Image (cartoon, rainbow, N blue to C red; front, top):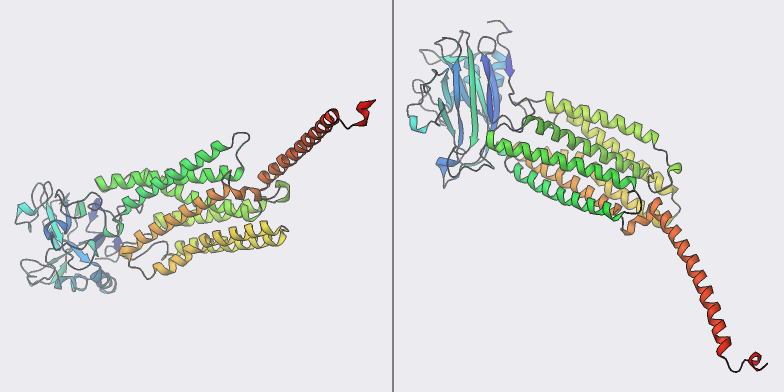
Amino acid sequence: MTGKCLRFRILIFALALGFTCAVRVTGRWNTGTNLAKVVTKFGFQQTSALDRKNTRGFVFGNVTSTSSSSRSFLFALVPQTLIGSFYDGFRHTSTCDAMMNNISQIGFESRCLTKGKRGDIFRWIPCMKGKLCREEDDPKVVVPGYQMTMQIEEPSTPEYWYVVLVACNLDTACKWVQSNTSAILDYDIWLTNGRPGSRAASSLTLQFSFDEQDTLEIYVVTFVIYLVLFWIMSHGLQLIKSRAPPERLRLLNVIIVMKTTGIALQCLNVYVFSLDGQGLFFARVLGEILRVAGVEVLWLLLLLLSRGWELYPKTAVSLRSCLIAWSIFAAVYFLLFVFNFIYLFDVLHEIDVFSSWPGYGQLFVRILLALWFLAEIRKLILREKNEERAAFVAHIGAGFLVWFVYLPGLGVIAMFISQLWRFKIILGITTFANYVIIACLLHLFWPTSSYSKYFYLESHLHRHRTESLEIHDLEKLLFETDESDFDTAETNPDNPLLAI
């Protein structure tokens, strides 16, 4: 077979836009052009000793052929500990014997591999349409409506498993040889944590890979607290009746609306995913776009504040260069996000925002923004002559600088966290950090806050009102003094003028 026919392709049927690593995968495999295909990976949870039957990992589905080929191909489940040797065997020798050498030691096959330690990880495909696969000798254990069911038991710790299609079979001497017949196979495979249909199966965990379990709860809680923040912001805008809300408050309101809407779409996507294993494509994409856009607008707000926007008259603050530079940073960051989100996805390797070059680019942009913010805050403090206002600016710089730099620091820490736990930890920390920074800004911008005196518009109105009240009080005092003198003159009997 030519080198082209022996290419090793990785198929991602979640399109890198689905929520998880393909809890349900459907597609077509041409055995003549792909010797092996890694379809997806899935994190199976630790099996409960109290209910082993219903807490195992399940892989079930249908694999049929569009042709009448009678040759067998292999459907295999490969643990993460062996996927590296499987890939290395193909890359170095491109032979079935090299690829299957280590996997054969744990898998069971009734004719040749009778001592497999992990047992139920092989199926010969394709299966005859309308019938069970040949290894399914007990129809009771097969999920109704499907041709095969495989069970994975993890007694001690969660682990990733890979669904692999291999154009290999065992010859009469029980050696792995290549299936030289070309065939087209259609497959529809489900992967779940727990027995489908059992009482022990929870909708919050069944459809999710272990690394993404509990994310529905995280998104729901986040949505609720953002709704509270949205209500507080609406109440704050209602407090300003005599004039239009300050621009900083309106920009913050835009950020809150974007974040709330994005989280709502994410909740919808994850909820639908918990039901059908696929989710809503448009909700996933639009939610991610709103999330990134909300963060970028938050950058803009903080950078404008560091320039003195809203702290000084508009004529004293130059914003043009700031807006241009922010636009460039935002565009670069978004392009890196799109590239990392769609194109750079490898099922065999642990690739995320902290372990890919687009991810490194995003972190670098964040560091540059932090340095820019720090430089602007420093210049603003040096320019400010009022010590009280300078201290206020310094506190803003110190507090919000932490938000700029925490993400690169989190990336360093994430390198030491197992991928099985990494996603949930990163999601929780970043969600909490973004919420806290927005809540702090709302506290600073609150119309009746004591901090409002540091902003130019409010302080100007306050001085104007104070001066008006002082003049009014002075006029009132003079008027009352004149009346008091007049009354005293009329009632004083010792006044010599009264005797005239």
